[in-house]
Image (tube, rainbow, N blue to C red; front, side, top):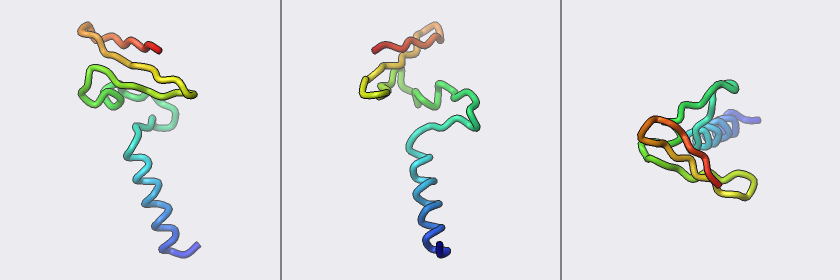
Length: 64
């Protein structure tokens, strides 16, 4: 693989990693990174859409 090909692959990986939050080595993912300031977010999983919602009391609710 040439240097320019390697740089292209690294650039693609960085672009993909900036699109979706990723936990560090299997550690916990902070909910604020998923919600990004919103009260709820939709998550697609195995063809189904789920809604993750933060309550006023600081709890999380996941519904299908």
